[in-house]
Length: 265
Image 1 (cartoon, rainbow, N blue to C red):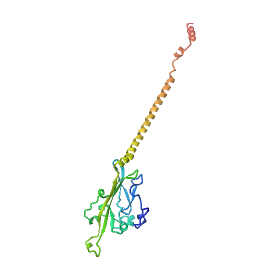
Image 2: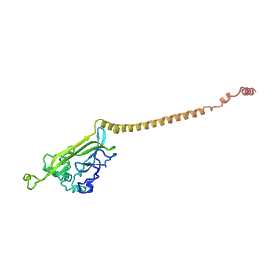
Image 3: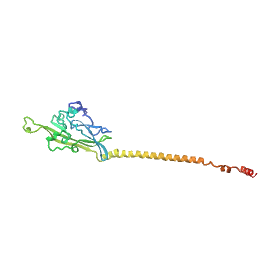
Image 4: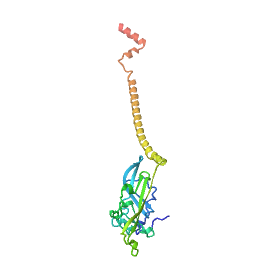
């Protein structure tokens, strides 16, 4: 909406709108790069870090994931103090942007959260494969190839004085639902992407070595031809030299007749 910052949190740093909307990032990413983006569900900017390299149908990619500090409380991670009041690490209090409703955001099944949160709820089995947040991105272009953003909505529940129905409720952060927003490149777009970013660079790489080899062969052949031509030229110049018989044979008849008369005399 044209804003450069939000007003939900306690510090200017936490209120900053950093990164993109999540569709594209700058090109030429490295393993030290991070992926910042603004999440409307969390009412704040999030930042993913490099985890590993991989391939998707032959296309190289970097996988970026949510660090454990993303939803850590201010005690465990000082830069997050502006998002407090906080509870256990792994929970983000979003009541300030949800009409003061007692709502907390986390990763599904309290993945990467304080293990004590799982003790109050049955049936939670967090795994990175099923509940982790990740983005697979082509490092050269910054185009996301495979995306899975998973978040969980939790309701803070406790005993309320004067309401008897809550008399037996223990203080707990209860998971209500979790959702996943995912997408990946497929079909003709993936084929075009693969041809332009994998096949064509590979062909160009091989072609440069082929041209270098052809250039070396051409230089070698030219050197041999030049050497042979010089050898033939030297041979033709040395051919007229002899033992003098040739010079005698080339005398004129008059000189030859006089020579014979001198010999008889």
